[in-house]
Image (cartoon, rainbow, N blue to C red; front, side, top):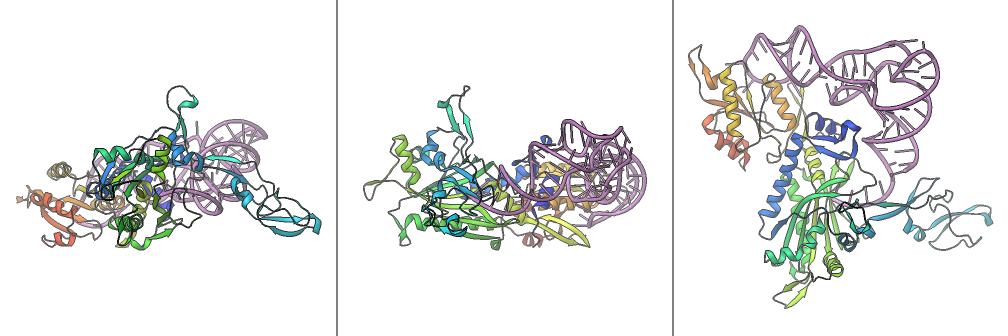
Length: 495
RNA sequence: GCGGGAAUAGCUCAGCGGUAGAGCGCCAGCCUUCCAAGCUGGGGGUCGCGGGUUCGAAUCCCGUUUCCCGCUCCA
């Protein structure tokens, strides 16, 4: 495949109306991006199929849409107020950066004056045996002074209510997950659920990232698709504790989902967090990495959050957040498996994986081979000649008719070859072309055959289909039926 | 926040002290019976922003903002 670099994609995204830099006319900001007319369709399609596949089609799942602003105590309970704040110091000499709270636990490099400047590595927390000095300089290079600790708060602080008082301070949510945890009992009771069950949610989250960038990969405002899947850890699944077995099931389900919608399997790999990497709430976390242009990076994470969150919220709120196990006659706090995906990262992966540069008749063709369900525009209706009013009128009618079910576009501003290339570049899977044969030629006294050309994006094959068949043909093409199977029933059009 | 690079038309870039260009794209017309065809015409840039040097700055200097590449963190 032709792996595009990020610049090519940024350029295409802007030129074709997928993604614009936020506030561009004011100089822009790299930490926020706007989705243009095609981008918003693509993004909505991703969210729609995710919601359909994971929430609507599963008997063990329900949905939720919690507010972005929540009670400030939520973030104390979740640990974000304490753990999302890392005081950092930098070495003025070697430019190394350290977390201030970990400095004392690090071995340090020392040029000892008592031994004529000999170099020693001193274990954490100990003074030099020769001169008795304790560490004051950079532990890494032993020479540089450290800057004063700088506070990084990864949460956006804001004020609820018109008066800026401390009591009204809260945060824009850094993850959608907490909205599910605090509604655990509401959902459980109102839907009369039995374990195991999951709650899915799609929504915006905000993090004051230290380093945003790599296009939409890491931005300060982003959208998450999260599931909190609750299990009874005392149950056994496949002979293993339920949380551990279900965790593995979700990892595979998520991986398969990306493959289903067009991400090549070998562009993904799993990454197991080691203990140092694990978040404060997690027993085990596995990331699905994607081969992004800047290297393997996290596409989504699937964490076993244990009973940490429910217990924390129970403790801070004073409300019992337990589940009554009818068989064992006991109250338990469920464990939770959290498959957490970034909509924007998913979109970027789908975009990257769809991008192809091909050579057609000696010319370069750029094509986005989107899965048909993700493609922003499903059908482009094109007149072969725009001088013929009958052709143009028929094309307009067809577009309106097809638009009742699918996203469509009409374009007559160039020759047919160029029109096809434009649609290729935005990933439109099918074009419908109306020509003279469709409508007939009055001057030559020829009747129309009522057929139009359907052209498929990837193979560039064309078939002649009666207008009367269009609805059923496209219903099959947009469903599970392969192009080759549909095409076999109709004559090829010459190209 | 630190180090390095960059910022000129929608996109890719040239111009590097004398007042802004190319290719592609876009728009209109002509032409054209299925894969970026041709011809003609057109719109579009206070050269990121602010200051300084100079008779004169896109060009030199300072500051600033934004972007890109590394260091750290996550979806």
